Image (cartoon, rainbow, N blue to C red; front, side, top):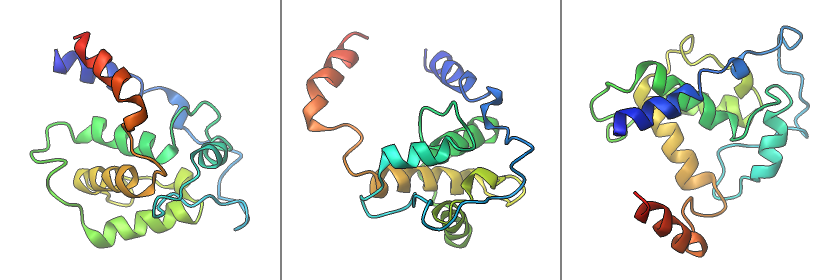
Length: 151
């Protein structure tokens, strides 16, 4: 059951939506256009998605989430302790800097030697520290329980 769910989720990240158009060979955003990704609960998700869609028009979630999950599905699903083992602080800081400077769309995790643990830790950090609200809000708890109860 879990394997099937993971396969179904993984298939949504294999779409060619992450290929950067050849016209965009380097980032051209001015600093005022950039939407920081890693903030202390102040990331504006609407603005972040609008910014990310400049290079990836079909995105439905922030590019950081898409790229980290794609990296994990490609090479991390068999990594023991994936979300338990912390990533390398130096590597993670470099990736955070790229995203906060608006260059996340041009970042290749493999070329930068971003490990699976780094990607998992970046995803956890984004979900824990950058979102203005909790992922599973109390306001929607009844709906979440109904979904879980359906299985």
